[in-house]
Every structure is written in structure tokens, then in C-alpha cells.
Length: 149
Image (tube, rainbow, N blue to C red; front, side):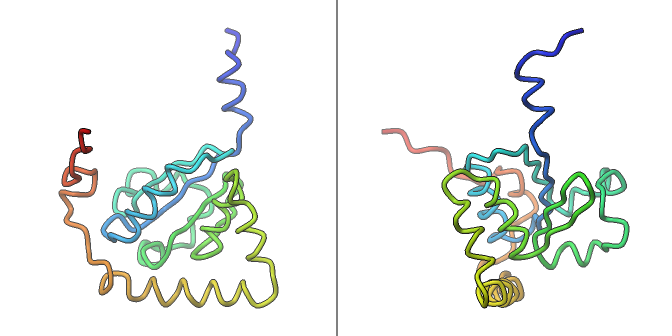
């Protein structure tokens, strides 16, 4: 059976898996924003809490514990390369039209360390500053309906 042009395009596009803390309000809001960006890659977002069924099938996670995954965002390439924390965000930005220049800034001497340090501080305080999501709200059940104008 011949492939459609759309199937061929999807097969050739890079695939990334983003693992995030599904109980973190900041993480949930960040993932929502990241999903809105136009990426040249196919990106699948998975909450670490929902990972049990697919953990073994994701390349590069053999030596990473669930506790480690919950400390920061992780972006997994299909070849097993793992990008964590600020490097993970930068990896996503590299696939995003209009924001690639932000990824370039990560290479500027000193900014790499500053971004990593800022990420660690925010990640450590994220529950204190932004709260923890109620499990029932995880799939958007608590979201307000869109405003009618």
C-alpha cells in the first residue's frame, strides 16, 4: 500500500518525547504553552505519573528513576539522547519556528550556566510558588470553558 504525502512527511519528521511532572501547575502551564508552538518535530508530551505503561519503550530511560524524572523536564530523542532541565526546553525551542534564536542564546558563554541555575531554583520552588495540581484536574477537567463573545 502506497503512503500518502502526509504519512511520508510524518515519517521523515523528527520525533521527541517530553516527560514532565503532571502534578506541577507550572509544568502543566508550560506544557500547554509548548503545545501551542509550531514545531518542525512531532512532539509527544507524557506526564511522568502516566508513564508506567510506556516507560520500558522509551529509549534512554534505562538508568533514570521516576524520582529523577520528577525533578525536571526531560526531552528524549528517538536515538536515546536525553536533555534535562533548561537543556530540555532549549531542545524543544530548536524545533520551533520563530524561537530558534532563543536556543542559540543557550550557547553564549555564561548563559548556559545561568539558565541551568535559574531552572534549578524554579524547579526546587515550583510547588511553593505555583502549587500542586489536583489529580482530577490533570486532563483539563477543571479548566474554565472558553469565553463566548
